[in-house]
Length: 398
Image (spheres, rainbow, N blue to C red):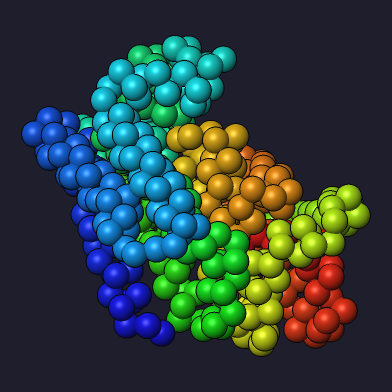
């Protein structure tokens, strides 16, 4: 494991983690000064990203082809800075809210109706407005059954984007950072060929675990663990629960069904694409598959990707940004497929994972994602070259 990568990853987690913790405190306390501090830090971060990815690389000596990539990266860095700054303004977030899920009531049919035997809570301090109060017991110490009819003022909000929320503003900015830096690294790293060369050096279990760590830590802090939610409420908010027998069956069935469907789509793609083009488009995914040469490494790769990505995307983001937007963001973060038909395959698979999150929970989505990753990797290790052609047609979503 490269010590520089380890240190930089830890620094990124600490810096971004501090921002999301401050955002959660600002929302809980409704503190305008702390909210302004968070916005200011995000503004400085936007400027730093433009300088780091857009301006500094221009000083590097390069040939004509590299120079074109540097100019493109500068333009993209400016777009990243403008977009991530724009979402800091309330009117922009209100405009975006029209395309994102509206905040919904738990049961519109029962809104405002008296209900017998409702669970009521006793406050243990000044109430804060939670972002997702569908989980019972926010800011409470006791819960009791009220036998008398109760007419609630309003049904609780269960999901949706809140343009006034500091946490949701930070989530928007972080998604822009994630997508922007992925595209910038792709340009500066030499495109698909550069991605393939990066995998050719081999992967270690520590590299894989370190790669997934930010996608695990930041979302857990982002939903308010230790600030707006206790551990149990955090698990509920992320959709994490026990994996039941039914969940295992759903995961196995969905994973196998997706592999069959995607292999058919991939085979069609291979049939319609010239061999040279197909080889170029699948070079990065081939290099990734070939770099995994043991079952242990396949387990770590499949498990770390499934856990971190599902908690981040389906667990944390989907309840806020919705089914379609989350799937699109997920697909765009997989730059080893760039703008190839495999990106559409990843989008379809992301929609399947999102449906599982809606219909069951994030735990089942994790299990499905794990099996979908692990099965072709294991077959490649067991069968070798004979499985590689099949792997090429799958567009492995790692």
